[in-house]
Image 1 (cartoon, rainbow, N blue to C red):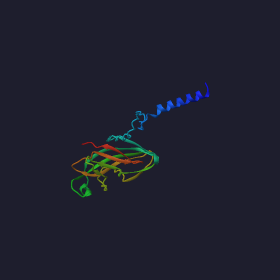
Image 2: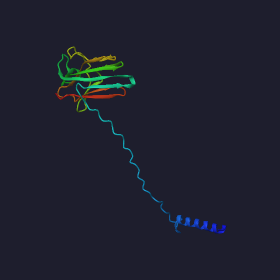
Image 3: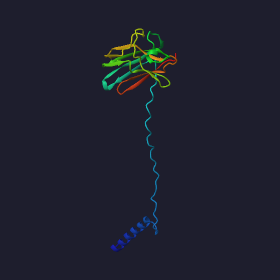
Image 4: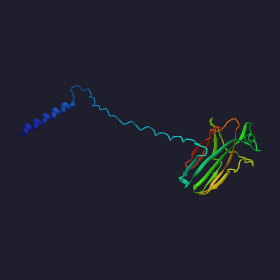
Length: 193
């Protein structure tokens, strides 16, 4: 083939290719080919942590505070409402309709030294009400008294009663204990009677 024939053939092929891709004589835009792309569904938000199940009285909570290099156990051993005392629960609250209730607690240190007190233990009611420990300690409250403040060392435990002024016509649903770093809560169910 000579050079002229080859050039003409190449030009013809190029013209045919441009005509096929270029569209017609009108200047209407042509739609780009569409392809349906299925994207994977976006991951949903992570499921919330399940609410811990309340423990029964006597159940032991094993906990660890990695940030402070301590660990131990905590437990609510018993709950008694209608505790008698020379001190009046109505006077503690400043209103009629209250009586004393006693919570028996035990906290042990498995590792390290840490403070303990009655303040992280709160009675919780179904209506959302909370009752903190009494600010009074009478001699006739159940013994041994759980300390207002104490320090536990590894291998040691503290057991005792914390007394609360509670409504005489209602019982708490649970005991809530706040502990650790980060702050965590544990819950024990109070029996209805």
